[in-house]
Image 1 (cartoon, one colour):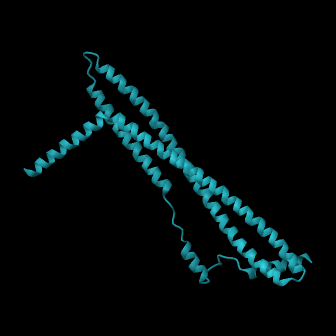
Image 2 (cartoon, rainbow, N blue to C red):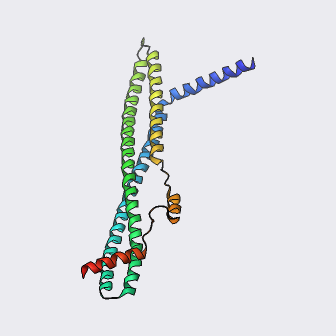
Image 3 (spheres, rainbow, N blue to C red):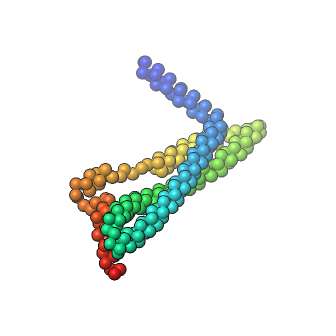
Amino acid sequence: MFKSIMTLLRGRAHDAEQSFADRNALPILAQQIREAARGVETARKAVAVTMAQHKLEKENGQKLLTQREQLEGRAIAAIQQGKEELAAEAAHSIAFLETELENSRKAQAEFASGIGKLKIALRKSEQRLITLQQGEKLAVARDRTQRLVHQVPGDDLATLDDAEATLGRLQSRQQERELTRDALLSLREQDAPGEIVEKLADAGCGAPLTISGNDVLKRLREQASLAN
């Protein structure tokens, strides 16, 4: 008996919830669209910030490249003049610059890839928002028309109203789920095994991650000997 009573109470609560949703479908939809619009605007700003960071990183990479080229030319001149101490010092600086330049190139590649994905997600969200806004206008117009029709004596459109309300709730839920899914996908980050790569490189497994000054000095001496 108690189980039947609880089932009945849950059924009535569900009916009351559905009735409330039906009566307030338009205000609920309007609020959902406002929240979706704010989410799209936030995503748009995030894309703009990422693009600005990408531009700054490209400028930093170009600056590092220019510094390396200038220092390399002077180091070769030092070798040609027999100033080995200065050449060695320059070689260590070049090694540092080349490591920084490689890191900058990797960062630029990640920015470029991330911006492409963000733009795709943003375009999809914007299109869904436009569809929602258009659907809201149609729903408002339909609601007003139905209210006028209900005022006409002898016309009973209760079944049609129920069907449209059911369809509207279904479409709203489906669109909300799609927007949530796209937002989660755009925010998902890929894990990078950077730490294990560094440990393996430090242990002598594979090519080193950084460039040594001795390697650069060897290369500069070879260039200097070719230039003579």
